Length: 421
Image 1 (cartoon, one colour):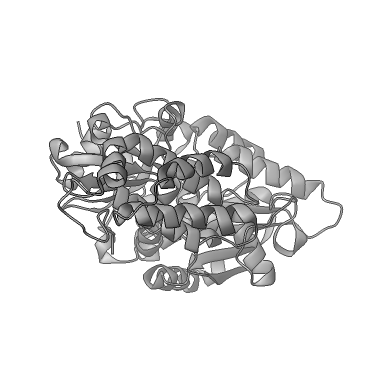
Image 2 (cartoon, rainbow, N blue to C red):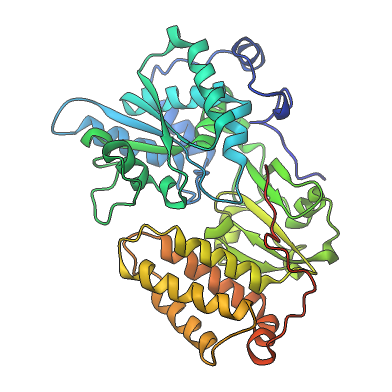
């Protein structure tokens, strides 16, 4: 059995560039008209589609909430839709690959969502460094300009980790400041231009466009465990690193096979990216890449990052680099990020460099326990979760670094987890 199940990436190879509009229509047919928004919302509910931006919130419920809020708003003007293609997670490339290769499928999903929630404007929020994705979407908009039922504009998302958080995205569109907002209202209550706003990841929208064509039953034909469907993942750390579309519920071992890495060569796996957590290599053959089962096991599918750490690479060094990055990418709005994250990053840096202070490790453990849930946004929660998972995944290595001031891993690569170009 193979983990690969192309749906979003069915058709021409992604490396060929944007699928032309006539080819897109010939392959999938026109997007069905929305004659009854309620029926389509029921299909989305029935499909079990979860958001692919990281939080895994049910897509149908999210659309329904915004539609109801817009319908009962105290002033006219409709809702807004923000198509989130910021993809600031350093290890993720799946959104930019999707936008670059299937821009019309993303636009289909955006136009579909706009009709369902009653949006009077669509904002394509795309990472400023994702040049091929931006070019593909702009070309797609030109190709179908006469068919657009709602105004669409493209906004360059800043190259910051927190810029993709939904309230930060709305804040940037409104005020030019890509920092998460500290207090309610949330975007679905008052977002772009003060209107109820649906913020949806590009992969989620592309899946919705396929469900509108083929139905909830078709969508649920894929998926081996509790969560139906397929998902894009960014796989790094092996000779065949890249973006793959897998059937949800496939085993982590099958995905490791895609990377071309022997299971015995895997020391650990980072699941969910920098906001995710570490699992030991011994878990490879028992873990199912199913969001619900991972959540029950205190792990996260997140944005679909699967990064393999080899036997010769140091998990302590890799974690120190991530935490240092997270501290530098904070919104700098509150103490837990400004002081707590930086203190943890500095202590981790000393441990990784084999120059720890005597109380660095117990202080990290204490600070990590105190950090979770205390920030203005969830940024420090992600760093705290990552640190907790690292101390569970690499206990022997932490002990060596702190007590013996040595590292058992011969490789000292600055980026052991790799990247997808």
